[in-house]
Length: 87
Image 1: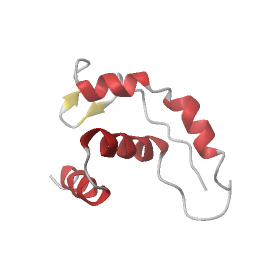
Image 2: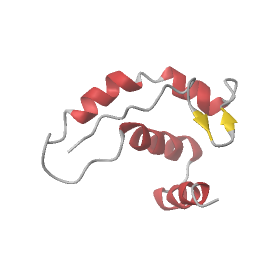
Image 3: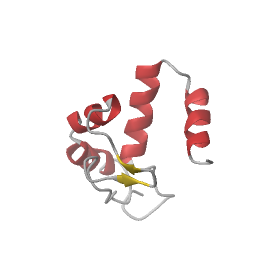
Image 4: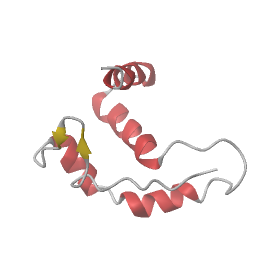
């Protein structure tokens, strides 16, 4: 099952710490990826009404990009992401 992610664009996203810096390396990378187009292809791989909901596309894609660009293992990346949400 997949539920479409209605997250705003990266330019419109406001975190609890404020607006993202448009000159940030990761923000620039996010703007280069056609997320909506890719999300529709990702969503088509899942059943519409059975099973547990899949990870949101942005989370799945972002994790893969971070893993590849940083050279971190999936376990280490999971640890860093988990720490970011426990502060």
